Length: 311
Image 1 (cartoon, rainbow, N blue to C red):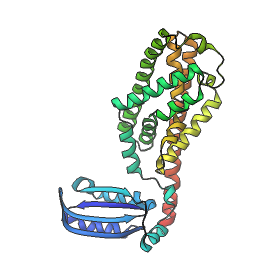
Image 2 (image 1 turned 90 degrees about the vertical axis):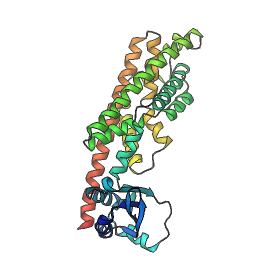
Image 3 (image 1 turned 135 degrees about the vertical axis):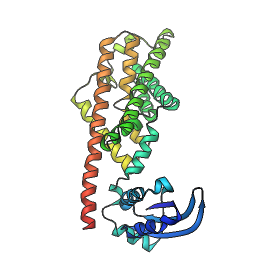
Image 4 (image 1 turned 180 degrees about the vertical axis):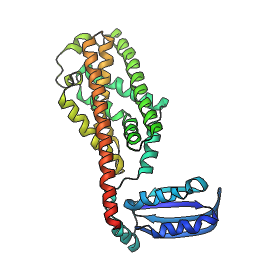
C-alpha cells in the first residue's frame, strides 16, 4: 500500500476527494479542512494499493494539484486493516508488477545527476577494479562493482527514452559519459603512479588472467550478460527492490572494462585498451536496449491488465 498526503486549495478539495473515492483500490480517506499553511488549503490523506497508485497520481496531476498544492507519496510497510486488504483485492493486477512512473522518473532524476560525489564513487570503483585486473583478483573486482554508481544514469537513459523525456535522457547520458571519461583519465594517472612504485607492471597486464581476461575480449557472451543485467536492473528498480546487488549486476559489465582500458592506456597497450573500450561501449548499449525494452513491455502488459480490470 501507498500513503498519499495531499495539500489542496479549499475550492479544489471536493473534486480531489471525488477522484480519490472513485479510484479502485483506495481506502482510509481523511480530510482536515484548513490544516495546511504553506501553501494554504486543506489536508487530504488516503491509502491506495500500489497497483492503483499510478492511475491516482496521474489523475491528481491532471487536476493540477502538483502546481497549486502538493502530492507526497510514502510506502506503507505494514497496514493492518480489512479495508486496506479489500482495496488491494479490488485493484487490478499485482502490486509487485505495478510501475509508478512518477516515482521512477523522480528516482532516476536524482540518481543520474552529474555530481562530484558520483564521479568520486565511479573513479574509486574504477581504481579498485584496476588493482583487480592487474592482480587478476576476483574479490577486488566484486568490491569495485559494489562501489560503482553507474546504474542510476543507465536507468535514467532508459526511463527518458521510454517516457520520451529528452531532458532526462540527455542529462543521464551526459552523467554516464562524463563520469566514465573522468574515471578512466584519473585511473590512467593512478596506474602510472602505481607503475612508478613498481606495484603495476606490464608483465602482469599481459599475463594470462583467467579471472579477468574476458574484460578486454568482447563477444556475444558479454552482450548476453549485459542484456540480462539490464533486465534485472530495471525490474528491480520498478519493483522498488533496487539495492547493492543490482549495482553489482550492472557493474560486472562496465567498471572492470573501464579499469582495464585505463591500465592498458597507461602502459601503451592500445590493442588491449581498445578491446576493453569496445567491451564497455557494447555493454552500455546492451544495458540501455534491454532496460528500455523491459520498461516498454511492463507498460504494455500493465496497461492491458489495468484495462481488463476496469472492464
